[in-house]
Length: 306
Image 1 (tube, rainbow, N blue to C red):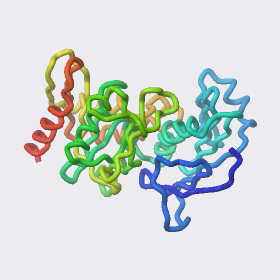
Image 2 (spheres, one colour):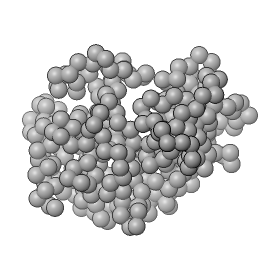
Image 3 (tube, one colour):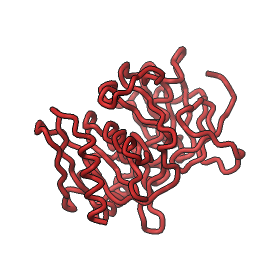
């Protein structure tokens, strides 16, 4: 853990210099100028009393946003530019990476003024579409179906959105999906050769290769997946208040926003997005594998409304 070797990566439109190996991210080979984010190891024991005295492991301090994961590490995210890690003895780098690329990156994006949605984003006909839903709704499985149909992944898990000249853009994350064994079975794929996620024995990290869209792209719509016992899929367009509710409900790590004192900023961006983005709800069957049918319906809808 005390290595001083640093590697430079790119994700979410940011150049990230890290002491922690981040093999999921794309390495950068053109120098260290213009570093946006530094990931480093350091001792954070001076924060133990502050974190330990609170009802929650999360605390916003002058030094930065601090949280502790039991049996893992204490993390501090500061000014949208630094992630500091104080690991517990013997903890694996794989386990630490889950929190660096998850909660830490979500907080860092919020500190930088970006809006993080929880879901998968895909490039379809030159525009980005976000697919959100509760855990187990089938976001990643549906995204994999789009990839099989020839479309490209922009982001899986954290969707980073920023306004550029009044237009919402999605910034690409990294060329990897997280798929359950059940999803791989549906696609006739073996999990052999893929790495299981540290906290899930039957969920795997799947590289997407050339099916990765690695440039910022305008966001054109949002689809929420919900499960239904019906044996078929259906899609329904939503009104503005429903759109607002969905964007609020599927903000990545939304419970952290009040602790970052970003409620007003967050609501303003959500309201702006709800006012202009086409938003739909997809009812997908729990009794039949309807992902290929949903892909076809979504493409037809997008092209008919374009």
